[in-house]
Image (tube, rainbow, N blue to C red; front, side, top):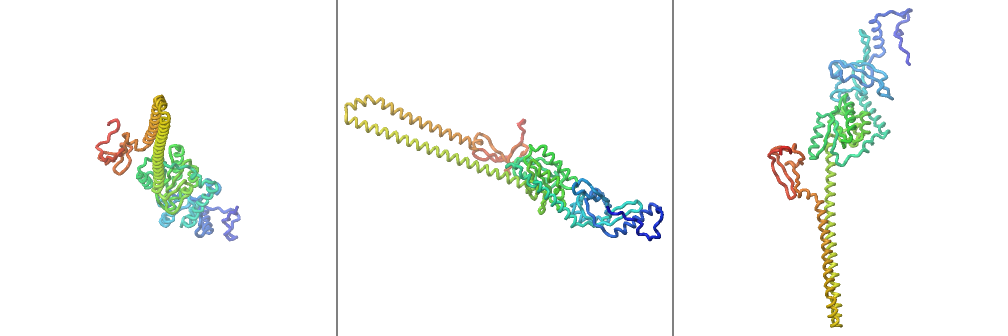
Length: 462
């Protein structure tokens, strides 16, 4: 511990009292003020974590706040603190630096900032404070970057940067949990882009602040709520509108990053900054530049799945047609072979009969009379066998054709069902999506009917 300064060491030897000097309160305070002024005659640069600035700044006038020194091993523990004041006349001069650090609202609580101060000891009240003369913006921004790099290194060492990317995003993510300010442009941009897809998304929005001192608590509360209902959602969307780099400081929170990394569902971010990436972007399942880009990413994913289903349907149709063609060819070939074999056997029988008839006319005629009925029976049985075989093959062919017909997607329409869209092509799934006078297009099995709605009635009124 350093030795405490002696307030009387500057006095000439003859003025040093032999007994403790008795001072008035003001006299003591004046001597302290004089000593401190001599010890700290000019500007001092001091750094620490800001506390209480935002509320005092919003009130206008002088700004009173504290600067804290935190324990490096436990940032929740404050090792030391001191009061600072920025006089009313200094506000405009500090405005540019404050906006660079804390955005348009100049909210710098919890940020590590380098201040240029002069020491002020108020003699009547015996209070020491530091008067803010300026802000070392470059050093403050550098401290923010160093802290950001430290968090990223720590997350990387713990394997958290890729943890959320190991979650599974469904091929058709329709149940979306949204975390943003419900009154922001980001919310309207995202929902408007989704509405253009014509897809039945289920969207649940947790209204959370995405900037300011309440941001951390709001977003943590949002993630906690969605985690309790994780079975109801496919993915979580974290978005906000554009802004300066300082506006994104809340998305560099270590605790928020840990929450996103360990979240049981994939988290997609669209934080709205074209140049910089926040720590939240680094740990998310997938990050995009803007809320609109997130919506487009989801729609492109669903479109890709629909294209894949179309290709699969076409492949099934083509394979079915090939199987049917092969079956028809096989049946025709077998029929022709059976007919040829029959004709050959009949020809051999006739030839033998002719030989026998020529060699033994009488016997032949007798034998012919004897075997004629049997021969006729064999011919009849052969014809019946041919007919039975052909009938069975035809029934098999009809059965296969019927199965293929039932598998045909158009069969549903041929059974009396239809698909109705609005004039702009949007699929209708509820009467709430149409009103009287809307143009309609109804798809039937054999064509399209264009119409206009006269009235819209619920099912119990129809």
